[in-house]
Length: 432
Image (cartoon, rainbow, N blue to C red):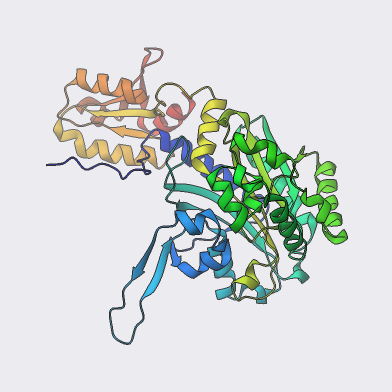
């Protein structure tokens, strides 16, 4: 019989690595809550048209990377529907904003999400076909201040605080403005004209992009095309006064709160819905593909999806790549991660003491202690061997301990063995 394995481009996340994932997610929840963001959970699959219209039919995501299938009608009165596993989450959040009429509150909606996304691309280090993202969106009617450059700067400052609090140092914030909906067509036309005489000298992917989505040529990582790309027009030369003023205000706010940044005129990001501010946080520990997270402003996305005017800004970070960086920063990139030890291994000395041991374990766990429960069938030596691998202490529960209420506790690190009254056991373990 063939051994079944995880599908290519997916993987299992196992303890103790999942403890690191939990730490990242809990830090995000804690930091985002301070900025008054609330969690949203959208379906993992949506109508295919949501991504075709929102992300853009000519993007690599929609044209090559989506997992799409036809959901067949189950009755003559129904129509079949094309469905897609979500390749990104911003479009789904904006769809939810429109569907639930959140704009009618008149308030800025600040929403974050944590969950899996799916893209059929070549698996490589830190990049999988099922991957997890943490992201957030600040979206609302213009009257709620959703167009303000202060919103952009606040989101960027929040991300800087998140990375700092997580312990990731050495990051770089890279910024650009891709202009308004009226700026971009002029720039794209100029870019297409500049690419026309040289595109045949470029890689096959960039030849295609030069025709279908010229902006994507700018963030190409193909070194053979660098010399040509360096000669292309800069989008800063095509921004109107309003877009220039917006970007200058974003930079001024970042200066005021001490968040360092670099302006990169080639940073455009790969999705059609971006307007004005675009950004990435990069880190040298990731090599050539060095983006930790990225995002930008999308002032027309709600209208593209049939909703009301609702300017917004958001970001997404890939957890796989973030965790790689965190491991490197903590010097844990080599060797297997270590389990977090339990506070104590509780060893019942005989099967008759299994039920009382469970009662005691329940009592200690209710005090917030991490307890590993043994079994009365284990010999004493086996309990010590297992306990030494899993916990800081071992608690022996024999007939004498059960009768007297005085527990025998041994600390594996010091070798010290003590007798502790049951009523003092929880506090003693917390202090050890």
